[in-house]
Image (tube, rainbow, N blue to C red; front, top):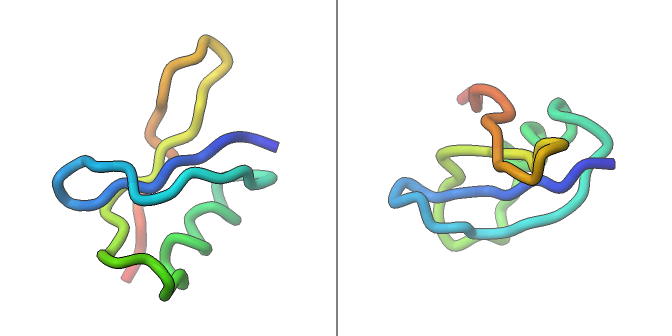
Length: 59
């Protein structure tokens, strides 16, 4: 499991949670309806304790 965070268009963290991989985190970000704004970026916590880009969101 890896820690992911979900950011809005201003770069503010909207949510943070664990997922087994990038695909699951990106799918959650696309489909999540409970958040107040649309997720613009997904990052994961890398092995060195730094946040890294998880991949592009689609439609």
